[in-house]
Image (cartoon, rainbow, N blue to C red; front, side, top):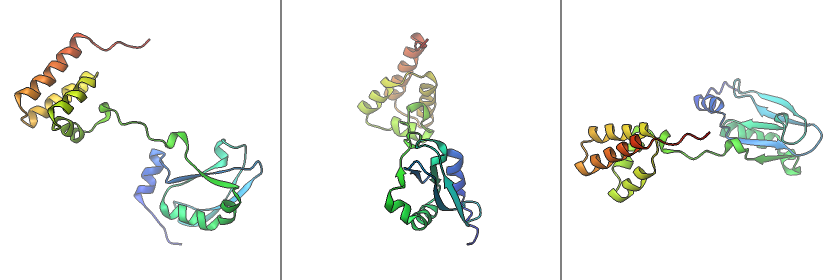
Length: 165
């Protein structure tokens, strides 16, 4: 097979976000054939250990690898010795306002005023409010919006968030 260099695959590997994940379900060892993401060649692997351990899990990093895995290991999948799983770390965490990009914050600022106020009132991080203030100034927003952001900033500065201890 030719070299299948795909930057998305390597980015997913770095972020630990596999395309799909499979796990062996039996106590014994299971031999599977996978497509090596680096060379594009088929490679044999032995899955062993008790269920839930790292050696029982195999990740596919692209649609091509997943399709190859399904075709090459059809018998194990049909028998149920290998099953597709979703690991807890693969479930995406909620995207908090502190993680918003500037574009996402701009869309919050551009919402209807009531929606904007609701989001603004839920913010408890001064840095986010400062970012919103700067973006609103760049966008030349109305005095009403600017005053709401400044009021929230003043509120946060007067009553800093309590540190859990």
